[in-house]
Length: 243
Image 1 (spheres, rainbow, N blue to C red):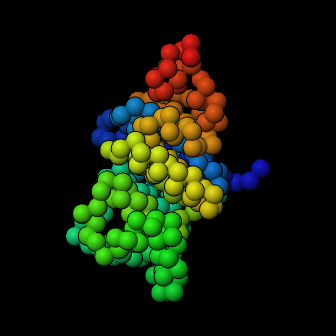
Image 2: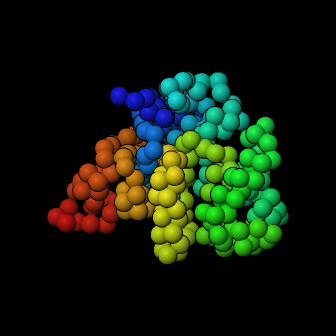
C-alpha cells in the first residue's frame, strides 16, 4: 500500500482550556480529493490551521511519510503544502499579476523562467485573471477573488492544496465553476484537502470524506457512501431519511 500524502493521527487543538479539535485522524492520498464537512464551529478551519503549522497541536502529522513536528509554515509551503484560507487574504492594493508573483516567492530559487511558466499555466487555467492581470485585486468580484486565491496557491507548485470553504459567499453559478476548477486540478495531479460547508458539492467532487462535529470525527469513508448515508443526507444534504 502506498504511503498517503498526508496522515493526521489523534490530532487535538485547544484554545486555552477549550478543546476545539479532539483526537482527529484523517488521511489524504495522492491524486485524490478529500473533503471534510460539518457544521459551523465543528473545528474544520482549526484542523487546517494545525496541519499548516499556524496553530499548536498535539498528535502526529506526517507529510510524504515524514513527521512535520517542528517544521515552520514556510518550510511546509516549501515542501508543497499550500493553504487557501477562507478569507482568501489577497493584497487588495496590488495587481492580479503581482499577487500571483507573490505566490511563487517560496520557489524563488527556481529562477524567473520557472515562475514565468507557472504564471502562463495559471493564466491558461484562469483566462479571466489573464484579462485582469493589471487590475487591482480589491476591485475583483467574489468569484474572481477566489480564482486569484487559487491561482496564487498554484504558483507555489503544491503537492497538497488545502482549501478552506472555497464556495463561501459565492453565487451558485460561480460555485459550480469553482468546483469544476477543483476537479480539473485533481486531473492535473494536484491532491486536495477540501474543507467545505456545502456538503452536497463537496461530496460530489471528492473521493473520500470525513464528517466533523464539535471537534470530533463522527463518520468517514468513500464520498459516494457518505452521500448515501441517511444521517448525512438528513443532516447535511437537506433530505429526509427516507430519501
